Amino acid sequence: MRIGFGFDVHRLVEGRPLFLGGVEIPWHLGLLGHSDADVLIHALCDAMLGAAALGDIGRHFPDSDPQYKGISSLVLLKKTSDMVQQKGFCLLSADLTLVAQAPKIAGYALKMQRALAEACGVEPDIINIKATTTEGLGLTGTGEAMAAYAVALLVCRA
Ligand code: MG
Image 1 (cartoon, protein in one colour):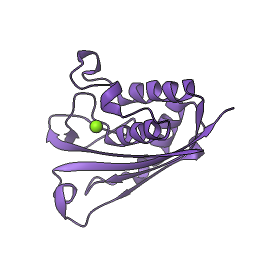
Image 2 (spheres, rainbow, N blue to C red; image 1 turned 45 degrees about the vertical axis):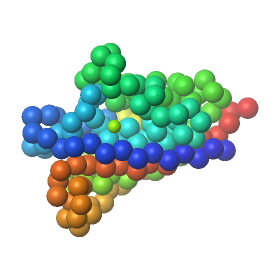
Image 3 (cartoon, protein in one colour; image 1 turned 30 degrees about the vertical axis):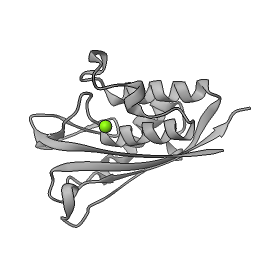
Image 4 (cartoon, rainbow, N blue to C red; image 1 turned 180 degrees about the vertical axis):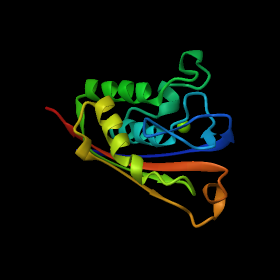
């Protein structure tokens, strides 16, 4: 078994849709980034790449590459999952934490689980999504940014 950890932050701005866990969430602000800036998926990709010792998301999908401009992070997750599987691993478990002052995402968690699971070719019940605020403190507390943490457990298929 291999374990990996991922962390990401994106700035919140006006005039962008908000994508979290592969789901568009109605909100007056969105995350800024080269892709759709789905901070939860980026943390998960880094956790999976970390567990497989495949580097990080910036190495495989550089923000200087025009082919990734505006891309759905679900596509990046699918590509990440493919790379991990090519190295002989499959995803056994993933646990994701969104750090955001608002909005509440509990009502979207199941939809996110399903979207992430479909991209990875696994069952939704091996993926957990939770959220916390930082009690109004720091970058995420003031609403300037959202952050996400993820851990992923991979198992060797051999
Ligand atoms: Mg990112």
